Length: 145
Image 1 (tube, one colour):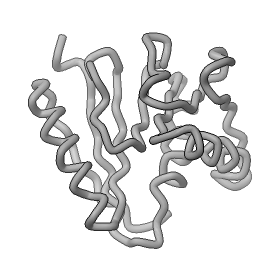
Image 2 (tube, one colour; image 1 turned 60 degrees about the horizontal axis):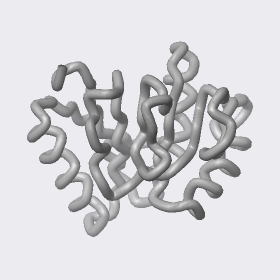
Image 3 (tube, one colour; image 1 turned 30 degrees about the vertical axis):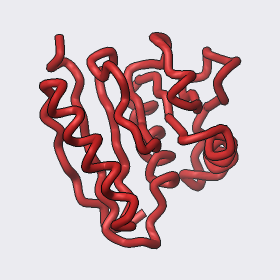
């Protein structure tokens, strides 16, 4: 069962590009494909910031979302690693510095990688952690928001 999760790293090439805005775009695309999504924030403040962003991004689109804990019926949930449960959905978008535990529970795992070199080391550690789980992460270069 360890190879059932598809892991994708989205490497931002420019420091002006935002991991959080990319997460909004990825969540919209996953939702439009009929998935339930959990966006993982590093802490409650970032979760609340993401909640605000999702009301405005992607521009001109509506992304039905809610903060965890609480409303679990929204197709896009925003929370922390501590709030990641079995009901999190099909797709996890991870904005934390930690690898998602037991990634095989999910169909897809999306990992935005900041352009800032100091922040990239956490992404490298996550890449290695997923490989240690027997997963083969893919990498995608992102040049624009």
